Image (tube, rainbow, N blue to C red; front, side):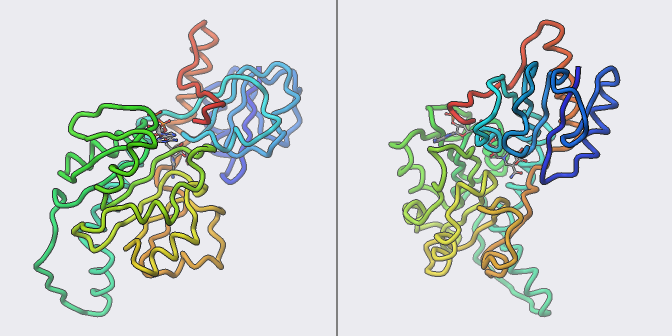
Length: 314
Ligand code: NDP
Ligand code: OXD
């Protein structure tokens, strides 16, 4: 039995190394190596080249090496086998660390103080909102969004969440569906996006949505934190909204094109923080162990966990 590791955009060697250690009784091969297509039972993918998982007659399952599966469902030649995604405590905690850090940086004006320090300027601001004065709206209340919402609420941010179907979460008012979107946006000062990229959500972070965010908050205007996918955002709209005050600031971890092209005006915009799609990296140790456990469990007659519905797209 062979596990095919099909990765672009990340270094493949650490993954091969982990899988070979965890599955010593199997062949673990990278795309491009020579292997017998009939021996491949499993594929582990991160942005595999479209078509590269076709022609594997005995493939039984595909494991996404990330939480998102948009990189898989865009492949028209994807074999019709179950797709399991990453649901992992390590990844969830990393995402919450990132969002909490950036929400606090916006609340406590961290970047402003850093800039003033470089100029040797003592900025004595007395009018500072507390977390409880700031309304955070988390779009996407799934595995990641619900953890983020709980951790922000523990810091006493005034948190709400929005999902596709109605959901309940202790201490977090929730909104759902198209009819829930406007009331959710109208009570949001910091918008955190943790939606998956699907045909329904593509381009959702655009000007007409930014206009519906609260204008009476304590941060001087709405702030966007997008850690979902670049395809959720319209970058031209983010820039124009920042320039005319529709948005006050943006923290972006994901982009329409990655790596973010050097020519993008997002790099140098004073109100934008750019990070290189690493708010919650997939740690090879954690993720490879989880996948090896999935393989062993399913071969022992158990069922695969975290299987996604490719039609729903997440
Ligand atoms: P989940 O599948 O657990 O949760 C997705 C959430 O989004 C659910 O609450 C779902 O609603 C909601 N949702 C989906 N479609 C819609 C819609 N049309 N309208 C409203 N809500 C919708 O995903 P995760 O929390 O595990 O991950 C979320 C995304 O985060 C991933 O898909 C990935 O793109 C991104 N990500 C980014 C990383 C990074 O490094 N930047 C790292 C990891 C993930 P419902 O509850 O009703 O199903
Ligand atoms: C993921 C990612 O989906 O890293 O896990 O973006």
